[in-house]
Length: 120
View 1 (cartoon, rainbow, N blue to C red):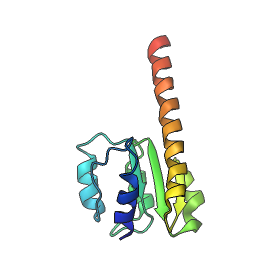
View 2: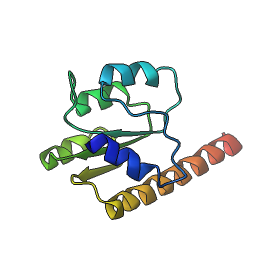
View 3: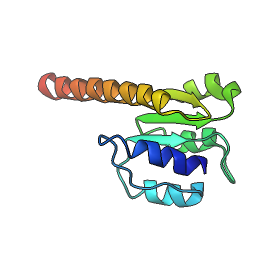
């Protein structure tokens, strides 16, 4: 249910192109290896692997947001280059704040890439 709520809220933001949502981290890993992913929305509790371990495997993905009922993991998550940490229950207003952070981050990242390309 929580995953479906995240998807339902995320679909309200046209800037997000959702390639999938998965109940199995194993399936998600196989998809991620084939796709270009810019943003991960993860929970701490996942079957067979924690969200933290999942993130460690996918550090190349620039944006990670944890949506979880475990606030005690917030500090540890930020050590894994987490952009935001949302404590459940997920609310639209809080997700809007996260989207603003994501958009600002992506804009800065794009400008940095352009600068690097222009000046080497």
